[in-house]
Image 1 (cartoon, one colour):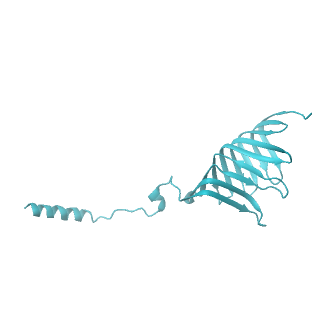
Image 2 (cartoon, rainbow, N blue to C red; image 1 turned 30 degrees about the vertical axis):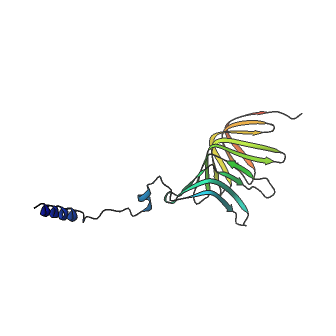
Image 3 (cartoon, rainbow, N blue to C red; image 1 turned 90 degrees about the horizontal axis):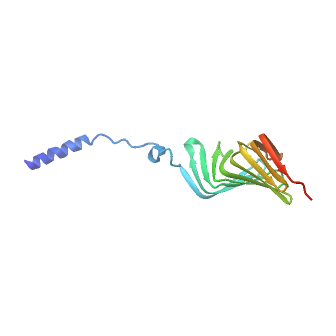
Length: 182
């Protein structure tokens, strides 16, 4: 009798288990939305203009790509941006970066620093966030900025920079302190 009961119970379990278990069909369903599609360790990325000249180059210890959302997240990005031929490049660093729109827009956040060597002098721009548009070769932010060079310090809220033309426009609340040379 016990053998018959065991057989009936096993048959009932097998009959109920015929229902197909749903399996995820998309990669994102397997890993979740917060997990990247892919990642690169010790990444080096180089972008060229139409003539084949290096336009921007950046490195990051880790880049995580989210293909469905169209962006990549970078840890501690460091970028070198070429300006006009013969001019010194711009050096950018930040704690975090996000690359959007098919690698054409780089958003930097957290202790963003831009250093530009001008002859014997250097100038450093510091802010909490900065967007670099690779298509227009512009950089901009609406956050407070500080610019320090050998002759003084300037504070402002928001700025736009046209990198090829070497033009910097400060948006508002501009204050500066400058010392003349001896």
